[in-house]
Structure formats: structure tokens, C-alpha cells
Image (cartoon, rainbow, N blue to C red; front, side):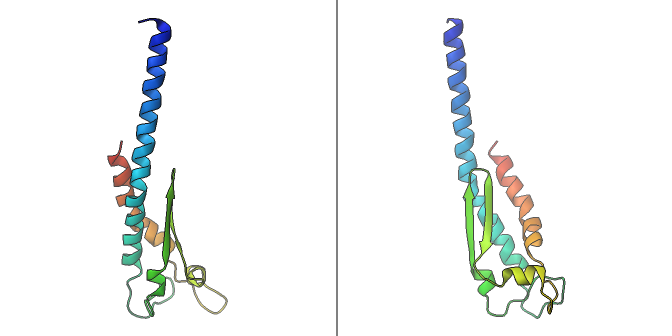
Length: 120
């Protein structure tokens, strides 16, 4: 095999491997989003009134139900569809924060890392 043919074969093999990895990462996106969703359901499960500094309690269930997942390339995430989610997370002048976003991420992180480690 000539050096040019060997270089071309190597280049094609590298391109195929990159494509394979991209496909595996894309396939892992929905599973990683599901891990986030499961963590969200666990963190936002407090059925009682929540004291300041803890995740908000469930009153209507709207905050728990209204999330949009997104994934693509190297980005995964979720976004609340409730306009008051930011007020709960950060608080207001009249209400102390009931942070939950970082807690969801912390709870989901081990599972997400496991999902992405398993594809390589």
C-alpha cells in the first residue's frame, strides 16, 4: 500500500470513529435528560410547606409537571415552563429563596456521568 493510500485509509478510519462517537453521544442525550427529569421529580417531592432555603413544596404540582427537555450535540438540560420558577429559585423582596436547580443537577450528575462514560 502506498503512503498516500495508507494516509487516506487512516483519515477515513478517523472520520468513521468520530461519526460513531457523535452518534453515541446523540443517543445518550435523551437518557441523560431522563436522569435530569427523574432527579427533578425527587427534589420537588416535598408535599408540605417548605422553609426558606429548601426546595419548594408541592401545592398544585404545576412546577413538577411543566418541564421541557432539550439536548443536542454536547448540551443537555431542562427548562421550567412555569413563569414563577425563577422567583422560587432566587427569592423576591418578600419571599426567601427556595433553591432547587443546583439540587437537581447534583442529584442527576452521577447518573449522567455514568451514561456518558458507558458510551466510550
